[in-house]
Every structure is written in structure tokens, then in C-alpha cells.
Length: 429
Image (cartoon, rainbow, N blue to C red; front, side, top):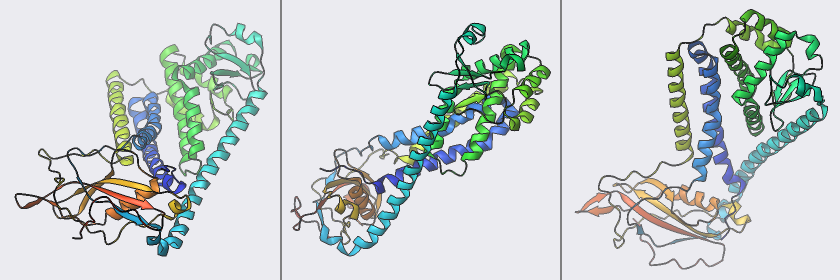
């Protein structure tokens, strides 16, 4: 049985991932400044965990198998779908499928190109680094956990893939002893936050969502929040005088940072960073409240993303009723599923088994794939879309209609003669 999933079937899950990522990104961009004023820069920086968390939760929900309904199910006779039923609709569906595939191919091609550009720039940066063995001896005490290289865009912390400290060639001439110590302490704070790895993740997300309109704003805001959080950690750990540290930031300012790196100061950031130095330290109750708020936001973001990407689990009533297997259950199949054109092109066929929850009025309340192997996703999608429009004769209890689950098998076949369905042919309501 062919289980290949076409490009058209991947677009809907990909768009759902993009929606979940966008909503989490908007939440961060809206809350970062108020949270920074109320609880400090490090709390605002922690907000940036929400977009990758939402993406991971949505992806995991899509990859996990759908939960199945509990209880005995009534199984309807199989409904046969052959190629001749789809012939009148092939042209329109082919045009629709081609646009969907073109859109997804554009997304994938753009991401591949962005990844190649990222790799090219990173390799060029690595080749441009200068190594001086004396640096490791000179600054061994201050940055014992980091390797040191020379680069004109330093000082900065680079992912390489182990964190690498970049120092400018004129580091000793440009900064006095106290300023050199503050610069090294700043980069060690980046290392303590794991910023080299977070920058790599941010760069990969930018590659994946290269088309995203919020991306330029988000990247600038992320870089600023990262530097403000690092400054806050530096002040808490080492307590430099705000005035002298502000002078260090002015001396260290650089217009461009290396790729995948965290720097000391960017000219556009200086105003906010120097203003932050004069802010009082937030009280412990505020910081604890911020931790609680971030935990709630993280849990809520992950839960919302997972629920949007996957159907919720079945919630049966206290005394769930399912159709008895011997009951004569009829359904309206005047409009059977049409054979998807992409499935015809790929010669995909097989049996789709759906679990359908039918309400007391015979309308479909919920549809989910049954456990076990299924054919191509395009066949499953076509079946779900069609069965959702059907009307069933509901099950009965004491002469009154009740809701319940029923199993609907649909056989897709490319042969001229459809296979004989198991059991007798279903009646029509």
C-alpha cells in the first residue's frame, strides 16, 4: 500500500505551524516591553522561548497518532470509489493541486536558498578568523571556558559549534584594563545564558520562515532583549559602576555583528541599554511573579499550539453509547468521495477507515482516522471532506435516537471494476 504523502497534503500542516509560530511571536512582541519594565530585562528575554515552544508543540501534535474512540463500533459495509467517478472533476482539481504544490515548492526553495546563504556566510567568517595562541594564556582566568580568536567585528560570542570568543585585533589598545575586564565579563554572561545556541536556533527559524513579514522586527527585538538581559546579569554578578560600563559600551559599539554571534553593543541599541543601567533592581516578589507568569504563558502556548495542530481526544459521556454492531445503520452516500487527482497521478489506492461520531439528528459531529495503516493522505483527506457532508440514521436506545460512533471503510481502486465491498450494500436514508 502506497503511503507517500504528496506536497499538497503537506501544505495544511505547514500553514498550521506558521500560524502557531506567528501567534506566539506576536505575543512576545506585545509583552516584551511591559514585562521588562515590570520585572526586568531577563524576564523579557525569557519570553523568546514561546515561539520555538509553540512550534515544537504543534509539530509533536501533528506527528503523534490521532486518538481513537473507545467502545464497540458499528462497521458499515465498504463504499467503493473508482477512477471513473472522478473524471468530470479532474481538470479543476488538477489546477487547484498545481497551485498548492507551487506555493509549497516556493516556500521550500526559499528555505533551501536561505540555508545555503547562511552556511556560506558562516564558512566565510570561520575562514577569516585569526588564531593567536597567546590569547588563551593572557585571558585564561577571565574566560577559561571559551576559546579565543581575533576578528575585526569583535568583541562577540560566536557559535562555532562550540562557543568561540571573538576579540578585535586592537583589543588591548582600544580598551583599558577595567574596560577589557567588563567586556570579557559581558561575553561570559552571554555564555552563561547559552546565547550561542539560542542564536543558532533563531537563525534556523529565520531560514524556515524566510518569508515572514514580522521577521525583521523580531530579529531586532530579540537582539536587543538578549543584550539587555546580558547587561542585567553582568550588573547582578559583578556590579560595575553604571557610568564606567556605559563608557565601555560606547567604545565597544560596532555597526555589524558577526553571523550567529552576540556582541557587546550595537549603535541602535545604545540608548535603551544605557537607559536600562539606571533602572533599579526589581524586587524578589516581582521576579518570582514573572517566573510564574512565564510558566503559565509557556504551558498555555504549548497547549494551544498542540490543540490547534491536532484534533482533541474523544470525550465520551459518562455512559457512552455506541452503535451495536448488529443494528441496521444506514447513511446517505449519494455523493461518494471523488478520486483525488494527485492520487491518480501517483497510482495511490487502498482502504480508508474512518471513525465517525453521529449525533442524535444524524449529522456528523466528529471524524478521525481509525487506528492502523491508512493509504495516502490525499485519499484520507478526500474521504473526510465528503463524509462530513453525509447524514446517518442514528442509533436507538429505548426507541429514542442517541449519539454514537460508527466505522466507515471507503475503498479507493484504480481498476476498471471496483472490488466487491464486504457485506451487503448500505441502504440510503
